[in-house]
Length: 182
Length: 168
Image (cartoon, rainbow over all chains, first blue to last red; front, side):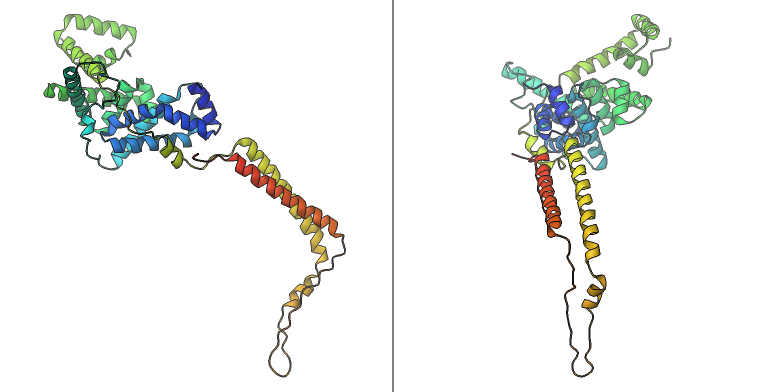
C-alpha cells in the first residue's frame, strides 16, 4: 500500500490521482473536525469538500515529510470557522445527537451501555455547540487535533495570548454547561 | 492565601509551564483544596471531550472533491517543453514574415480595393487581386508550413497528455 507521505509527495508534484487517494484516506477525520464545529452533517460535508479544495490550491505548502492528515484538519477547522462567522449556523442535525451505528466507538457494548454512551455523547456535543465558533475552534484544535498554543495561533493567525485567553474561557464555559446538564 | 490563576491552572494541565512555575503550582495544589477542585473540574472536562466518538461519513466525498478541483496544473517538464515550442513557433513566424514581406507588392494591395468611378453612367467597382510576385522556390515555404503543422500537432498532444481526466 502506498504510504501517506509518498502520496503527499506525488500530490505536491501535481498528481491529482494521488491527491484523490489522500482525500479518500483523510476524509473522515476532516469531516469530523468540521462536524464538531458546525453541528450539521450537510454543512460539515460541504466544509470538508471546501477544505480539500483549499488544500489542493495550497498543495505546494504541504511538507511531504510530515503526515498530511493534521494539515487537512487544520484547514477544515479554519474553513468551518469562516463559514460560521460569515452566516448563521444551519440548524443542528437530530442525527448529530446520536452515534451512527457504523461508528467504531461503542461496538461490542451492551445495548443499554450504548444508550448511556450515546446520551453522554449527545450532551457533550450539545455543550460544545453552545460555545461561540471561535471558542469551538480553539477547543477543536487543542483537544481533538492536539496542537500547542503556538500551533493554534499559527493556524488561526492570531496572537498566542488571544488563543490562550479564548481556550481558558472556552473550557470554563464548557465545564459550566456540562455541570448544568449533569 | 492567593489562589492560582486560570492561566496557571490551564497551563499546568496542558504541561506548558516551565519547571519553577510547575513546582510552584504543585506545591500550592498540595495545600489548597479550592484550587485542587478547579484542577479536577478541568481534568474531568478533558476526559469528557475524549469521550466524543468519531462519526462515520455516509458517502465517499472523493468524487465530489475531484470534480470540483481546479484545472490540473501542468507538470514543470511539460511547461518547459511548451515554452520551447512557443519559441520555435515564434522563430518560424518571423522567418515566414521576413521571407514573404519583400515579395508582396504593397502599393498594388492598397490600390486593388479602391473604388473607381466611371465618368459617365453608374459607378462600377473593379476588384483586382494583389499581385504577389513569388519568385522564391515554394519548397522553403512548404518546409516552414509543414514544420509549423508538426509543432502544432506535437504541442497539442503534449498538452493533452500533460492533463489527466478529472474523473475516470
